[in-house]
Every structure is written in C-alpha cells, then in structure tokens.
Amino acid sequence: MEFKHTPVLLNEVIDGLSINKKGIYVDCTIGGGGHSRHILSYLEGGKLIGFDRDEEAINVCREKFKDFSNLTLIHSNFKDAPAKLQEMGINEIDGYLIDLGVSSYQIDNGERGFSFLHDGRLDMRMDKTSSLDAFQVVNNYSKEKLINVLYKYGEESNAKKIVENIVERRKIKPIETTFELRDLIEAAFPKKVIYGKGGVSKKTFQAIRIEVNGELSGLDKVVEELSLMLKKGGRGAVITFHSLEDRIIKNTFKELATDCICPPRTPVCICGHKAQVKLVNKKPIVAGEKELNENSRSSSAKLRIIERI
Ligand SMILES: C[S@@+](CC[C@H](N)C(=O)[O-])C[C@H]1O[C@@H](n2cnc3c(N)ncnc32)[C@H](O)[C@@H]1O
Image (tube, rainbow, N blue to C red; front, side, top):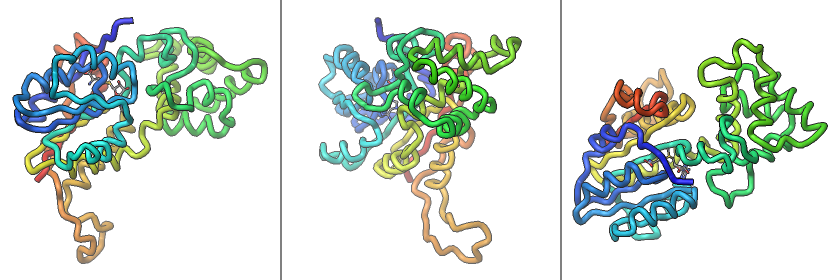
C-alpha cells in the first residue's frame, strides 16, 4: 500500500518555525515526511533529524529522501529524542515539530488495525515491535480497567454499556477484528444515533489507541525537555488532534512561559521559576476554510508554537 498522508497546517508550521537555514531541526513525528520535505527545502548548511516509532514511516522516508545527506532518520519514540540527540552530540536545537497522532497511512491500512472503517486484526500499535496491542487491551483487560480507559482517553459517556457488550462477547470467543469491535460498540447505542457525525466508534477506538501506544504519558516532560534545548529565538511547534493532547500542550507551554508558578494565594513567590519561552500564538492556530475543504483530518488540528527567550 502506498504511503499517503497530506500534512496538516503546512504553511502555518513552516511560517511558525521561522526556519534558520543553517539551523538544526527535529521532526519528532516524520510520518510520510510531508512537513520535513518543506523544512529540508529551507535548509542550506542546516540539518534535520527525523524520528518516528513506526518503522514503515522511517523506511518510506529513507527512500523518499535518499538524496538528502543532511537528514538523519531514527526509529524511536520521540520521548527518547532528547537523550538520542545528546548521544549524537547535539545539545542545542533551532526548532522542533511534533505532529501528534496517527498518519492517514496507518489509519487507512486495514492490516494495522487502527480503524473502524477498515477491517483488520485488532492491533493499533504504531511501533510493531512493542508488546501491547489492541487485541490484548480488548480481550485481557478487566471490565473496570477497560471502562476507565474509555472514560479517560475517549471521554466516552457510554463506556459502561460498550464494555459490558465486549465482556459478554469475549466469554464466548475472543474479539479479533476491528469490525467485530465496531459492531459491539454500535450495539450499545440506539439505532438512530449510530450513523451520526464521525460514527459512535470513534471515541472508543481513540481511547484504545491511546492506551496501546501510551500516547499521553510523558508528553509534558518531553515537550519541556525539547523546549529547553532550543537556542534563544528557536521555535517549537506542536499539532494536536483532540482535547486531551491539546490540554497537555497548552498547560506545558503556559508553565514554561510563566515567571512564578507558586500555588494561587501564595503571598510571596517562593518557587523562583522564570519564564523560558514566550507563546508565539495565544490561541491555537486552526485550519482555514480551504484546507478544511481539502483535508478532513485538519478539522480537529490545533497548532501551538513557542519561542525560546
Ligand atoms: C500525523 S503523523 C505525522 C505526519 C507527518 N508530519 C507528515 O507530514 O507526513 C504522526 C506520525 O507520528 C508517529 N508518532 C506518533 N507518536 C509518536 C511517538 N511518541 N514517537 C515517535 N513517533 C510517533 C506516528 O507513527 C506517525 O507516523
């Protein structure tokens, strides 16, 4: 299957990074290289380091960018990026991009088991070498743990009923495919809401994917570490696709951009915290009408940018 993915908020990211052509840039989620291709086109003497935890994405980029000697590709979780960069002797960077979530290639490829629109074995691992997959979450988690995953990572108000359906079915046989799971989710809703906007499976699939890939844990820490690696004037850009991710980025950037972070009503500052960055945009940047018409994935995208001071 061809690796297809249209980069979201491309112009906004490139403008926002304000690229220094001799700089060192990090694309933490290189995917199909849509953003990276444009970053590379601005570099003259600078370099780009691209991470992805999906080996297929790394292999595709290796082929696509074989003529670029200033690109280094690393198959790794970007949460290890600060350590990996330091191992390479890179202690300061000019910019980073994190474009969170999954690529269209991953979603549209039934074999990867991410989507309720394509049948495939329940998998959802971005990194095929990791041990936890969606099959195990759906079939082995206790009822209480599964309900909690759906509430916490999907904000699914119908979690209890959905999980009851799952638990009843798995007493008879394991739930093996995305379509089996989708049918059990739909059975938890009245018929008239099943075909509403986005489908009733969206939140449950999102929740299981986040659990499988541990997407939110440590996100604040790595964003802080990368931001502190920026040179003065360097920029960090993060694109999120749902409110849980966006809240983490918003709060992390806000704290990095604030002088005192003492608890409210502390009479005198005791934390000594000093702002390390400034917010380039106070409100998140969202897709304009043209992009919304051309790429439905852009509808939930929010871009936040900071600059090191
Ligand atoms: C939205 S796509 C990025 C698309 C890319 N910007 C482009 O224009 O082609 C997200 C990519 O990030 C990768 N990814 C998500 N979380 C990751 C993590 N924690 N570490 C490394 N890669 C991750 C996914 O495997 C996927 O390939």
